[in-house]
Amino acid sequence: VRVGVESCDDGNMDDTDDCPTTCVPANCGDGFVRAGIEQCDDANMDDTDDCLSVCLTARCGDGHIQAGVEACDDGNISNNDACLNTCLAASCGDGLVQTGVEECDDGNSLETDECLATCLVATCGDGFVLTGMEDCDDANMDDTDACPNSCDFARCGAGVVQAGVEDCDDAHA
Image (cartoon, rainbow, N blue to C red; front, top):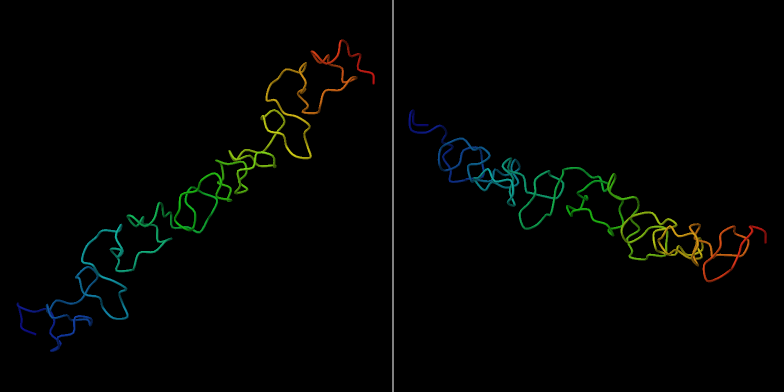
């Protein structure tokens, strides 16, 4: 080691050991990948490329969004938040319930099952007929039309006069 000129000199031309050919001790960010210690070293502090500033290869779940590769990366394995553990942004219809945003998510676009394509739980009055649970659903609050607010077909004896269907209804069948 030449004092004042070199910090290290191991006498070889190996840039993957503790003293590369620059004669400056190897460290993360010097552009040389130290064998067994660093996974990569691109000599920059950019955490959006394929090599993180800590000399680890970028991957989904590391907490850094890799530009052009990941839509998000929140660094956790939860599939119930805005970023899935596949580094895709959560969305209605992906089959995973985003806590606080979606009531349900069955991953399909059916409007006749318990979870609507809007990721809201099907209810009487939503305008969609829930198979096996509702006879009708006209999405209005008019209890005198052919589909009452109970989503059961209007019947004589229901206590409500169905316009155009019956002249009177005394609530007795």
